[in-house]
Length: 120
Image 1 (cartoon, rainbow, N blue to C red):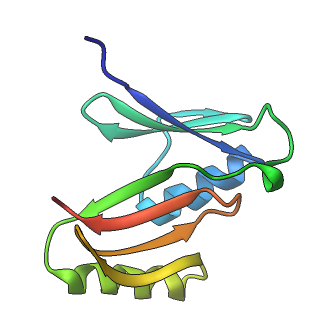
Image 2 (image 1 turned 90 degrees about the vertical axis):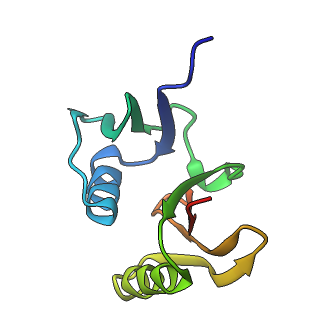
């Protein structure tokens, strides 16, 4: 059975979003176009940032999250939260203990959600 190989996040300004994600995750795009940028996540999977063909993103509900999982104890999550907050990233939810462990959520400039959680 085929497996997903690309996750697409719709953005208003693809170059600005690529700078945001590149800086946040310390990655460089493997494909660049004024309206579409792709990052290699490993294992043949990519994260793509695509200028929204739907128009205004401000009225679009956010029904999914990108999730970054980190190994280590809960302090690793708290330290990354402090670093990102210090960089001015928009905080959606502060670190808390969920059923799967320590977690927090931030948003990119378009309101797309990014969750940080422990490796299961």
